[in-house]
Image (cartoon, rainbow, N blue to C red; front, side):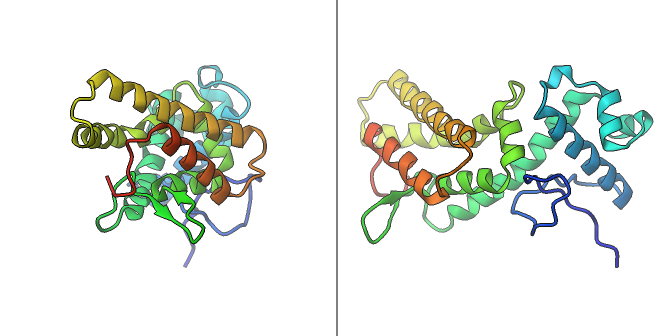
Length: 227
């Protein structure tokens, strides 16, 4: 049986490494259609590492992907449509991984401690594992102005955080919660961007511990209990 191709984003375009958790895998259509969509999405990622989304033309994308313009329009309306579908596809897969990290009674801000008492947010760890396993795709999703990937990840956390704050500090003003949320989101994003730009030299666990400590030190209303 011929295996259907899957696309993982690694350091080399034609890597034969074991597939990572996150794959750009279009849904629906026959095998040929999925293969074509994968080629187009792979080509888009490669081009986005060199230029902005607005500067990419269908002609150069189809050349890189070795796909005809006619075939492109059978799958997507334009470049932005391709990017949006790719981002949404990856996000849905990533969301499933996050939910698995929240199994049982654990919430998004559930905190675990190792033998040395070092705190870790399991859901946050999944974010860094994804980035480590998919560096090129992560760079595209985090650095492209058109991407809302990180905001989507934190959208659920916004509601959970507001609810938890209301329980722990009922007198807290709503706008204060919004500032806490913005602080956590942008602080974490800054750490991620710095980690990527410096070559991800630190192990995932170390960066997760740094980020978790950063969040807990400044967002003291989070308790050791699951939110």
